[in-house]
Length: 148
Length: 284
Image (cartoon, each protein chain N blue to C red):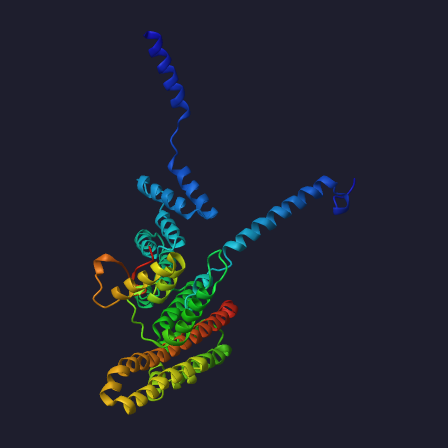
C-alpha cells in the first residue's frame, strides 16, 4: 500500500489545487481592495486644497500669422493685466472682465467692430447695471456677459 | 374573421410568454452593476426605481445607494437628503453612525464644516475602536475646518500613539506661529503704511515692487501737477487714481496673506493626515 504524500500527487491534482489557490488569492485581493480605506482618507485628503488665481494672458488663437497690430494689442493687454489690473480694486461687474472682453472682441470682430464692442461694454460696466438682463453668478459675484 | 382573431390571440400569447417585466431584484442588481461600472446616473435612476416599487421594504439600503450615487455625481445636497432618510431607517447603531459619516462627508465637500460638526454631535461616543477613531477623525477635521485648531489638535491626538503626540503638537505650534506671522490684517496695515510693504513681507517681491512703483508714480505725478497747475487740479486729476490703486494695493496684500495661510493650512492638514494614516492602526 502506497502512502498518500505530496510526491505521489498526480499532475491534475496539483493543477486543481493551484487553480483553487489562485481563485482564493484573487478573491482575497478583492476583499482587501474593498476595505483598504475604511476611514475614508481618500475623501478627506483634498478638503483644504488652496485655489490658485491665474492672471489671464493673451495668446493668438486664430490661424492667421501675428501682425504688428496684434502684437501691440497683445503687449498692451498683457502689460495692463500684469501691471495695472493686478493692483486695482475688483471693480468690474461682469465676467469675463472688460479687458478680456475687449481682446476677444478685437480677435473675433476685427478692429472697427472690436472698438465699438469695447466701448459698448465699458459704457455698461457700472454699479447701476440692469440685473434682470444678465445671469448673476453668486460664486464670482459678477454678471455673466460673454461676447456674442 | 375567425381565423384573424385566432391568429392575433395566438400571437399575443406568444409575445406575452416572452415579455416578462424586469423584477425588482433584477433592477437592484442591474443598478449595483451600473454603479460598479461608474455609470452613476444610470445607477441612480435604477435605485430610485427600486425605492419606488419596493413596497415590502426588502431593500433597506437603497437610500444609502441613492445617496452614494448622488455623491458620486457631486450633488451633495441630494446625497445628504438621501443619507438622512437612510439614517432614519437604519437597523443597527453602527450602520446609522456610518451613514452619519457619509452625510458629514457631503458637508465637508461643500466646505460647510459647522454643519458637519452639528451632524457629528448627534453621535454619542461609539464603543468600537474603529468607529471611535473615525468619529474623532471627522470631529478633528470639522474643527480644523472652522479654524478651532486647539480642538482639532486634541481629536487628532487621539488617533496617534502617545509617543507621537509631540510631533503633532509641533506641527500645530508651527502653524500657529505662521498664522500669527502672516495675519491678513497685519499685512494689510503694512501696505497701508507703505505701498508694497505687505507684498514684500509675504514674499511677493515683484508684486510689492509693482504696487510701490505704481502708487509712487501717481504720487510723483500729483506733485508735478500741483507745482505746475495748483492743488485743485492735482487733486481732481489724480486723487481717484491714487485711491483706486492705493486701496487695491492693500486689499491685494491682504488677499496674498490669506492665500499664503490657505496654502500653509493645506500643507499642515496633509502632513497631519499622513501621520494619522500611517499610525491609526497602532492606536489601541
